[in-house]
Amino acid sequence: MAIATDSSQPLTTADGTPLRQSLRRAERLNKLRAFGLVAPLFLFILVFFVFPIAKLASVSVDNSIVPEILTNTVEAIQDWDGTDLPPEPVWKAMAADLVEGKKNRNIAKVGKRLNFEKPGFRRLLIKSARKADKLEAPYKESLIKANKKWADPEFWRVLQRESGDYTFSYILRAVDMTYSEEGSVTMVDDKNAVYLDIFGRTLFISAQVTLTCLLLGFPIAYLLSTLPAKTGNMLMIFVLLPFWISLLVRTTAWIVLLQDQGVINSALIGIGVINEPLELIRNRVGVVVAMTHILLPFMILPLYSVMKGINPSLMRAAKSMGANPAIAFWRVYTPLTVPGIGAGGLLVFIISIGYYITPALVGGPKDIMASQLIDIQMNQQLNWNMASAIGVVLLAITLVLFAIYNRLVGIDRMKMG
Image 1: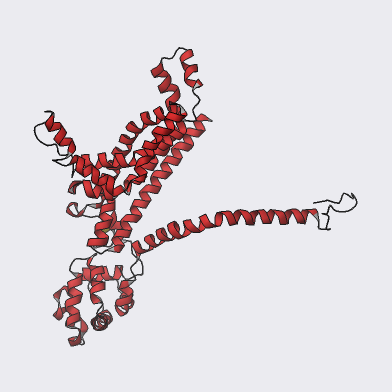
Image 2: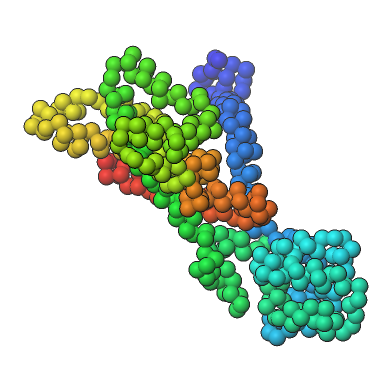
């Protein structure tokens, strides 16, 4: 591209276009090309990550079924002050909704939703709907005659509280919290508090697996990084080999190995080490062992990539200055591997938190993790809202852990700087 050089006129290109305009046009084209290159990745992330997470969050707070089915009652109960029993218009609205619900055969759906908040609500609505055609003014006396539970103000308070399109009841229940009779948020009683225990167990098992992977993966990664390239690449194939085998097959193999009559117990009994089979499956031992085997490559690879970039002369320099090999390794080499330890640990820990197949197959009733709880809510309880709420809490825990890791890495980099 030729450029005019007459100093008395603005700089232009050969075709007479001002140089500044031509540069702006070229810059816009470069931006469009860059956007075109990243657009497929951006679209992929949007469709397969952002939208599903947004849908998960919306389902966890969705409460549209109540205002859709109990339309008249929801509208009439808004002005109730919550003391004693609602006024007659609310009872009349409920009678109309029961008639409509019986006609459309959907009263059981809203009953199931409200039964989550107040046990007995589903039966109350279904039984009342069966007698809806016989309800007449005054509707308060008529409904109480149909079922005495209508005289309990708590049922009406629950209905008023859960009359909006959105609710935080599922999120609260996912962390063992609920609403009290006064409407304030409180912890559930001990006999119904299960979710926090399961989340705590999930985090503890994930930490155990992460630590075990680190203890096993660190020496393996060190060996691979220090061996000659030909030998190291050959051994790396064995690290990557599990990725080519089905996860279900690997988990089933551990069942064969760890069961009472499995290979490990049979071998130990055969050589006289033990007399009775060890309990290696349907418990915490089986979960940690199987998950460690499956997730170990995710620890080795980040460590290996960092160790491969460490200059070997640093260790030689430390030894030349009087440090013995152990001190040189601990004071010089190990701190340089911290980024790999952090990346591998974070990767293994986050994967462990959401793991399902392996704990479900080799774990016992006392080793249920959050992912299994989600499966129970979806496939057994058919409560997609609660399953989504548990998923949201799990996602929040993951984001918090990632933020903590990011913060620690940032502080570490500042110290090194």
